[in-house]
Image (cartoon, rainbow, N blue to C red):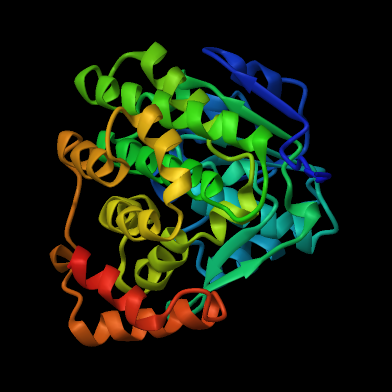
Length: 334
């Protein structure tokens, strides 16, 4: 057998307490962050940005467009994103629109958006719009747990389940990918172990650092993870109904795993070994242990909403999964 594996992760990853010092030599930067972080972001990062762009949840198109205008007008030579997936994706999109402006990502959640070249934004109707461009791959990632320890615990843990989703979707992706499989299974093992530790010790910088390493390991096949069934199903109900991406993984991943186990039984034993039990059950138990949302009905969705979402999944994945099967997964999670 011959095969090809294309490794497309950032060229440089800094990790550990104090690793934000890697930003010290940057000058003339634009900062892309969230409203909740904007006031203290520059001082925490040790930066004097020439402009600051504020991005809302799910990266609204209007915010991205306004950010592009502001960064272009500022004459910035580089971008620094600080926060979760929304500002990181927005900075990637701004970088692409400005011809590949250097981008340093400082994530404060476990969403792993910083590890993919693709980026998503949300249009005025709540539809997720994806962009794939190699220029979106960030130049460096800074995993500094001292900057992440203030992230609200529910957000931290739910994006940790998102990272688990990445690892599972990558492991279950079609084809042969032994390099990814090793890292994905290690990410699964580490996340199952360290996310409950983070819940029990939310102020422990070392634990948050271990969470970050696990999230890093989860995302070796970003395209496969982003295009996986659980992710696409989550995107169909996320922005439109105000459900954060991490929470959609909490709602859906265990049910998607139960379904995928029927389709790919040969892939389940290694996952079970890494998780310490039947994968769908282990994920459901983890969400309970972390005290995170488990039911779509908690967010007010109706049967009609789920049918619309199932249609969207079928269109996005070009019929790879039967629409009635997708609807059944949504209903199981309701």
